[in-house]
Image (cartoon, rainbow, N blue to C red):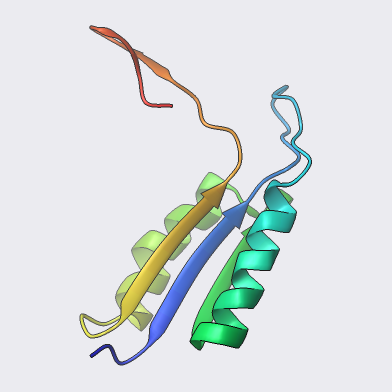
Length: 95
């Protein structure tokens, strides 16, 4: 049995680096957060659009997680946004 249900939810519609915007990623993230809170008793961290930066993600990974999440907690990560394939030795890697 888990002590707590936790979720870190990222949703990005608007990108600042020339990547085309999306229409539903932020709404999808918000809807999932609401369902997790209301129906499954999750504590949710939401990171949406301009707040969803690498700096904030690293802060969560390296500071918030170690300080607030224990081995008895359940943690769900969710990302709604663009994915980028990186070039590897055997062609594109990732999505």
